[in-house]
Image (cartoon, rainbow, N blue to C red; front, side, top):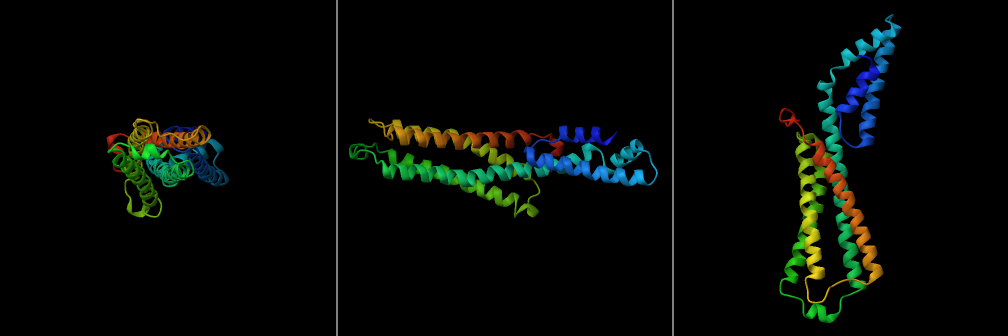
Length: 224
């Protein structure tokens, strides 16, 4: 197998963020090319030098697992950063807006008994999700030396995000429209706040989906 064919097979075997994946593939190609250049300088023809360099580098099935493990950790770190940053931003944004545009006194006075409980539950879900994102980020970066299964951490965060977002959305809608009088912001601040929230959620769903997708590996690979 020549270098171009080997690199193409390696690229097809890997799944993860484009940037890190591209860097890994380029690094593998450069290493193979350097080895082939050295063998060619020793007198081998180019095709034979490339085939020997590929053979020394190892089968794609042998080295792809290590590369994929790092790509999995990279995906988990990206989602961890996103959750650790976006959740506090979203919570702070809504808190500030409600202070600037407070609801009518009648709404607060006549709010149902469950309102405070639901509001606190929403805060807990958001806080827990953001904190878990921070923990996964730490585990897959500074704590990587102790983490033998980046797949587990990455997948758990992806699943948590997919679970928490519908709960968060449902609780938010309940707080907004579950009372006798809708507890909504004015048109302009409400639209802007919802656009920012939708953008944050969209990025979270995209990253969480990728984390779940790339961690669907055969049972024989779960130890990595």
